[in-house]
Image 1: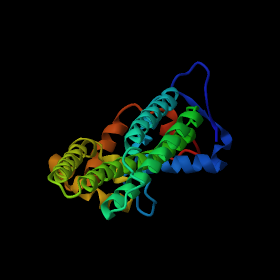
Image 2: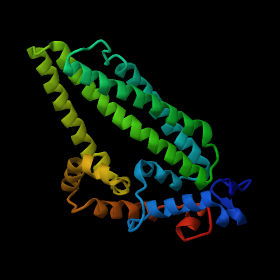
Image 3: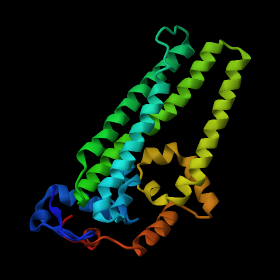
Length: 261
């Protein structure tokens, strides 16, 4: 995998091994980065959540692993904090239907957050070299971590609201909590649509079909806010801006169709 090595005395240059053209891991990573830095994805499998982190390839090679470490540590800490809260939601002694549903959802959220912690820590422990192949592996790890962190957080939110309804046993207080939960959930979605999705459409463009279905309203709102007709239109704009800046030598070699990473 380590077909690209740092040249002593150089901060942004990577020497590519002659054997990299036959290395399947390097070929896979190179194909993935060429796909990410393009909006022509016909006949290709979506990159998924890994796309949210693949822009780190634009950093100088010696800073890539540090960026992945930082993101991994932040996700691990956030998942851990959410885990403390989520673990208080499940009521294993619940007997009513609503309480059982809340417990099932809350338990799944707890397990998902545990997995998110594991995957985030794996990136920090394993990805320590500056080559694009290692960078791609780190992005894949963080993609899986983000998947479980996102879904675990959403399920924790839902489980808490359902748990409150179950404990209130039909009282007005339970419905007040439910109303607050719905209002805050809508506000979070509006925030994501008008900031992260609106200004960073390229990673959104590389998501899978289920993501487009689940977050369709967010994507529509972001397109409306930005005055564009589709996610691809925004992705083209962001991609042009990214490629107009400095591009490390190893990434430029890959984007130009070079033999390896």
